[in-house]
Structures are given as C-alpha cells and as structure tokens.
Image (tube, rainbow, N blue to C red):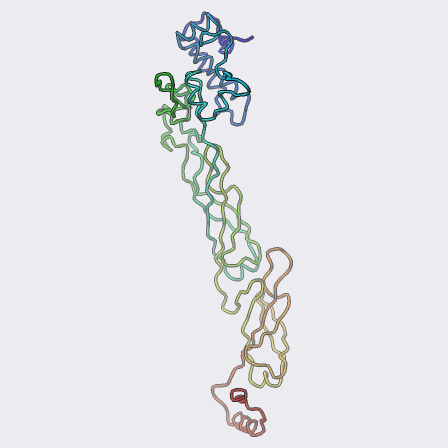
Length: 363
C-alpha cells in the first residue's frame, strides 16, 4: 500500500523543506483550476493535499510514523467513521464539513463556485424598409467583456501565474478551533479560490478581464420586421467559473415606408381611384415594393376603403414559405376643382341618379 511519503514522492526521513517543495510542485500540477473537469486530477490533488496536511504537521507526522495514521489509530480513516448501519459522516452534507473538523482537521475543501452562464447582450441594427425585404449581411460593433489579452485571463502578470494560497494550502477554507469542534470558513486571503495572485496583471489589475469592441458579421434574413431579434449563440458576455458565454441578440430597427404599411407578411398600399373609375370599373397599375408594377382590376361600384388582394407580392416570410400578399386599399378621390364640362356632366348625372346615399339613415 502506498504511503503518504510515496504520494509526495519523497523518502520517509525527508526534511520539511523537501516535503514542502514536493507538495507545491504536485499541487500546482494537479490543481482543479488547471484541470477543469478532470476527476482523476482532482482526486490526485486531494491525496497530495492530505499527505501534506499530515507530513507538514510535526505532531501528525509523528503519529503517522508510529501508528500508520495521523489520529493515533491504526488504519482508521476518520472520513469513514461509522455510527452503525449505513450512516457515514460524509452523509451529513454541510454538517459533515462541520464535524469533519473534529475527525479530520484541515482536510475540508471549499465548494468552488459553480459555473455560471454569461449575460445576454443586445445590439441594434438600423435598416431601410427596402433592405428589410431584401435581407443583407452586415458587420456590427459590440462592446463585450473578454479574457484579458495580456494575461490570457489568469489575472497574473505575464511570465507569472497564480500560486497555491499559503494560508489555506489550496483548500479554499480555513479551520478555527472551537474546543471539541473545528469550524470551517472561506479563506479570507484567497476568498475560497485556493490560489492567490502575487503579481497582478498591469492591464486588467488582476481581474483577468477587459472590455473590448468586437465586430460580428450578422446575416439579416429577408422579411425582418421592426423589432425582430436575431440570436448569435455564445457571442454575449463570458461566463464565470468556466461557465458558457451568453448570447448576442441583434434587434432590427426598420425605417417606415412612404407607401407601404407592414401587416405581418402582408403589405398595405393606398391606391387612389377616380370617382368615375370606382363607379364604372377600371384597370389600374399598382407599384410593388420590389420596383415593378402590377395591374389591378377595380370592379364597378367600388366603395372607398375597399381592399383588393394581390397575392405573392408582400414581404418574405421568415420561415421560408414564400411571400405574403400586397393589399390595395382603394381611395376614391373627389376633384377639388371642376371644368365646365365636368360640372355639366355631374349635374346631368345627378338628375338621372336613382340612388339616395342617406336613405339608410332614416330607415
């Protein structure tokens, strides 16, 4: 069976400074911050830490050399202390950390902060009405927090690196004796991280982060509306404790059109028609938002405000299922000035007209 000396790679009679040197080398090699997600490395780090906790303490080392354990009992592991049945001191959760100080002083490690996803951010892109229908590809500047380019995100001055906290020896917690018990609390020096930065990066002041303006290429699909949100996954703020980055949402702001009104995927346009065209019927031309013209048949007797549908000439649908419709809203115009012939013709029409437009008001 491997001994604590074997764990640190030193001989049994090794002096304290040799043990300390071996510990620092192994702790730096297997520290969880250098091996994220590596369970084997974390377990090895715990073994190295436990070995150093015992062999760096004169009394514990003496007991270990005599009895083969640091508590004066042969082969007994306080973490496996059993009160009967299947109860184990580790089953106590947070209380296990409290009582762990009684049975295994110095062996508790702080719970490291859980990975946290970065914040989402928004960026505005302004579009003309025509560009919103055609779609385009553009670059947008976005200010985000990123890893410091100078130190690579470590927070330490280039050429140096964070070191094992000398106060908690990388555990992230310190124990305070309270008689029979030993209460654990986050290490005040490293704030529970287990490492400290002795020489902070001159650029980020030890934070490991900096604000930068990045330019992202975003493809605006044809058919976006004012307020459409386009998601760029992972382009938001960086996460904490190794968590994933947030997302960037590009929000479109579309300038209104002089002619067309947006109604979902449909577009509405007001089409003026003369009184005679509305009464007798006519074929008129209607402009589309794509620069061409289409012919529209106005039925005889058309009333002001009637809407006629021109299929497939509206805005593109974002799901790729084609285009909406162009809706012509007919507006009957009344001339402000009449020529002599126009007046005579209308007076003659008035004489022969059989319709009373206000009849419904009195029935």
